Length: 360
Image 1 (spheres, rainbow, N blue to C red):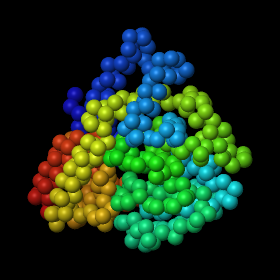
Image 2: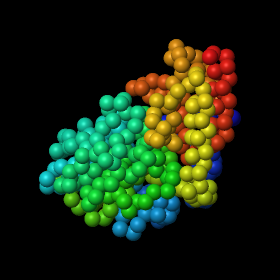
Image 3: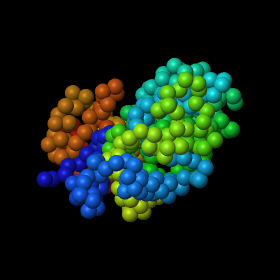
């Protein structure tokens, strides 16, 4: 079997080392005679796996002691409702910044629960950049400020962390968590779907400051209240045990690579190569403002979109998978998450150069 290069935006590729270890342990986990998927989440063995995963994530991200780390279900999309239900408080006000599809979805969902103010938006320029700090119209009495540091679909990333003053900052880090160092203390809550840089789909990580727990609005379903999950160690019900286990293997793999600092250097190198090639070409183009180009998701278009289908057909034949852009924006997109090796980017650039030579 030959592994191909996977540029999927999610579910995304996992490190080969992690998949091989999971394969080796699939039928008989550490000599216990059963799979980790068949093991009780209450067993001493699985509890140890879960606790080690949390400890490793805390170490990788330097999570302060006054934050709780939760391993939940429902995906990042589930957090679009869970966050306002827990954080809006009595005045029901929150500010959101709109920079693309996912922040737009978060705004739409939050408006079901309170007074949601769009503090800044780049919709007018087709979400090709992010608002500057000075352009944000923030409310001092907002319960929180929400933003999406990396818009997976549009390939737009912030080049700064918004200053929300005394208002808790909430961020959807689904596409960029663990890709570079992050000062967690600047945030009230960070959340991320696992299927890009953490592990398989079905798991969601939430990092929440302890003072924000216990404030859910009356009538909030128990499963949508952060407090019971925190009290139960993310085992209020049966958690996605296999996803949690695989996430733990990814965290250990990241530590072996040198942690998030080493990953940031590699990610900058990978994305830099691809952007440099696109910028030098008259055949390919990137629609995002240079300062806001994502290191994780690189969208690009061809000079003639009639060639898109041929590009995808030939790239897949060359072992370069999942390069089709999201249906809402078209074009191409190469997602360069942590598990994508630099050799994959080199192979993609070689293919793009040859395609331009023959079709340009």
